[in-house]
Amino acid sequence: MPFRDRTDAGRRLAARLAHLRDQHPVVLGLPRGGVPVAALVAEALDAPLDVCLVRKLGVPYQPELGMGAIGEDGVRVVNEDVLRATGVSTADLARVEDHERAVLAQRAARYRGERHPVPVAGRTVVVVDDGIATGSTARAACRVARARGAARIVLAVPVAPRSFAGRLGDDADDVVCLETPRDFFAIGQFYGDFTQVDDEEVTACLRHAADRRHRPAAGGCEDREVEIPAGAVWLRGRLTLPEGATGVVAFVHGSGSSRHSPRNRFVATGLNRAGLGTLLFDLLTEDEERDRANVFDIGLLAGRLGGVTGWLREQPGTAGLALGYFGASTGAAAALWAAAEPGTRPAAVVSRGGRPDLAGPRLPEVTAPTLLVVGGADRLVLDLNRQAQARLRCENRLEVVPGATHLFEEPGTLERVTELARDWFTDHMAPAHV
Image 1 (cartoon, rainbow, N blue to C red):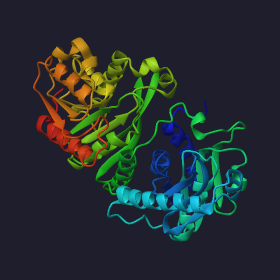
Image 2 (tube, one colour; image 1 turned 90 degrees about the vertical axis):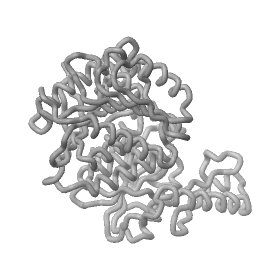
Image 3 (cartoon, one colour; image 1 turned 90 degrees about the horizontal axis):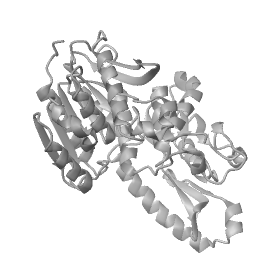
């Protein structure tokens, strides 16, 4: 399997595109699946990120087969070979196109709101998707960029059929593709995890990218990649410390996520604005993640968090700062498990959509003030949090965000999580005395 997931694909694609960093490009991701990949590329290139809105025109009785694509600014691409092979009539093509134009307008409003598209005139533009099948959407995206005045267009994808380059014509000036397998049937066959990307993840990626571009200059905010020793392995992370930070929060992600989680990065940015440092890190190495048993080994993950806690307390920029844990999903169980260890002593813990029940008998031993945040529509997890709360002996509170589901993808719900976490940490974190 060439790629574990879109995060793996994004990291590898970013490494291949590193030579473009000095050209100060703009990165455009194709929603939905291309945006998480593009977000990692944009971060590596220190480039602005935007969406390039295109819609596949699917054959009416076989919608997964593209007979063309449309894009913003009236861009239209039709695959004549597919039309001939399927016998789709002009009227049927028009009906599909009318429907997809309406969806395109809705997506533009949802993803950008009142924001204008990122200007690309005279710039190198990197168009990113999670893969190419027929090439229609990729061609439409390149044409949108061209129509907006891009000086050079680089189409970058993790995987595509061997024959794809011949379908692009001169729509792209350069093409970067990591894998071109011989037996290609669908993009998803080359990903271990090809879970559908939702609209909230797209908007979270865009928000984080915008916040990253508007962070204080280096003199006012330390923001760097770090490697943390954990026994025989090294864990990768990103440490952000606003000038005069009063504390630092370690983020513990859930299963299937990583330090690149757009939701955790969104919350982290909110904490940074409140003067709190953040550390987003991978609990497992890439090799360890391949064994799914490790992903759900709460004791192992908690041990890793304990080691990261010790590392933070020894670093020049974070020694003496109060320490907090922010756990999401199964990561909340690891955070509470670690918080029960005598040597960690975090000042506060926040759980977002967490599974504190998985910390089991460790819950009564937690002494750090703990906030449990759960979506009101996430009923099973809400019940599990109520049961876990009954076992806590420390200061604690359960906050229910009305209408939110497990991933807090509804408008305004992740903002509410950020507000709750910010207030809990700032209320409970004072300079540590160690």
